[in-house]
Structures are given as structure tokens and as C-alpha cells.
Amino acid sequence: METPGLPRDDLAAALAARRELGPDYDDAFIETLVDRIEETLAARQKDTARRSKREPAGEPRAKGQGDGTLTLAIVSLLTAIPLSGIGVGTAGLPGLLIAWVGIVLVNIVFGVLRR
Image (cartoon, one colour):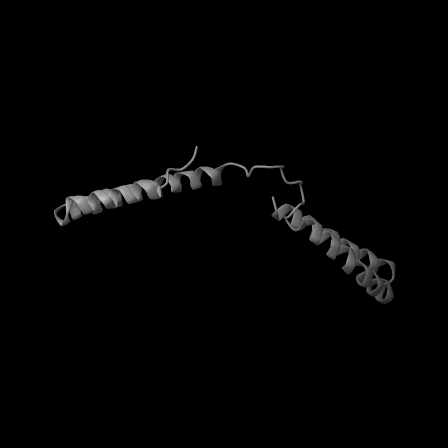
């Protein structure tokens, strides 16, 4: 459904009629013009509200697309390299496990909070 607009032809005709009628009908002209503008704005507002309630047209977004999941996965892998080195260098295998458990927990918490 297309929202009604204020066609220029209609406005031009209304202005021409106003000129013919003279200044005695200025109040009626203004009232009519304001009513048309309010109707148009109300119709546009309803149309905007209806569009925002439904899903955007086109292909549905794949899970993980645009919500930061891919970014978190890449950053997790990039931080895993130095953290693994630091963990192994300081505490050996337990340090490595602690580093990886921390990375996994961050990803799990992020996944739970995004739902």
C-alpha cells in the first residue's frame, strides 16, 4: 500500500482556488491544507510503523552475520596465540589450559548474552 502524498497539482489547484476566492477564505484554505498535511503524516507514520514490525525484504540474514560473532571468533583466535605462549611459558600445560578455558568461556558468555 502506497502512502498518500500531497501532489503538487492538487496544491497548485488549491492555491489557484484560494486566489479566486480572495482573502475572506484564507482561514478555510489553511484549515484544509493543514488537514491534508496531517492526514499525509499520519499515513506515513502508520506505514513506517508497519514496515518496522515486519522483517526486512530480501534474503534472511545468516546466523552470525552482522552480530559480531565472526569478529569475536577471529579476535579469539588471534589472542589465543600469545596467551597460549604466555601460559605455557609461565605455568606449562596448566597455564595453557587456563588460557584456553578463559577464551572458551568468553565465547560462551558472548553467545548466551546475544540471544
